[in-house]
Image (tube, rainbow, N blue to C red; front, side):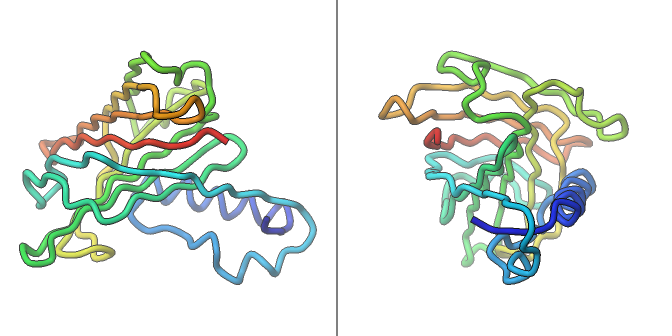
Length: 193
């Protein structure tokens, strides 16, 4: 559990949201010591148990990658979650990351097994205001954390499957990036908490 003043939380979350809308490959470290300097309001972040079994496609200059996943991670908050899937091949000189942003509860009834949902994003207008919204930012470059392409998807389709336990969901995602910058497909599992 981290603590901080409410206004500071709103400011930081606003900055993160703006960062996502104009580019989401950089992130604020939720474990940084700066969180300890705001002692007034309780703020809870919950690490997600995440596993990625598929990550493939084209993101910007990284063309037709398939697999080579070395990290999958995620955090959930009160009404949103972030899941990252990272692939890299150092010998070939490429890295790719898909960052899924879920606005709404991961336990939302719309995310039940069998659901197939498509989300359109108009970045000039913003997201459509629905209670549940999922977008993907694609990042690519010569190696992890050296991103040269930072591309928000214009369309995201997700299909939800049952996991190995009743508390687990498998989310298959397909994201299409604008202006021929590529498409990415992936599959992650996460535990509901």
